[in-house]
Length: 139
Image (cartoon, rainbow, N blue to C red; front, side, top):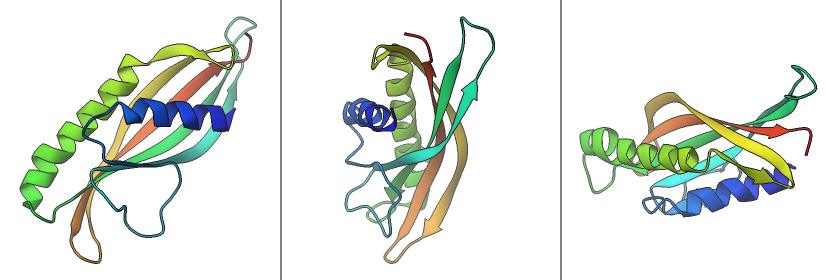
């Protein structure tokens, strides 16, 4: 199921026009183009409420990063990054409910920490999001 969900997340992110690169794995270094989205699995939980609402929660960490080179930290952090974050959230909100591998699925996206990171050549502004991909156990 993970590989199917990862592909679906990539497909959703490919429709976000401001995102220039997508990585479905943790990076050892910096993305080549910005704004970049890096995402990877965080955990999976089984949820058993009753026979009609059993599902698995596949949780992912999403990091959106923008480079401050060529702009100011203020502009990157208060204009560019918020616009990309809004567009990513909107893309997942638009696709919040669908079928995946003949199972009903729905998405919940939440915001995490925002910050700045000093990298080799410039500061990077980043935002963390948490995505929960809920997949019904029944078909």
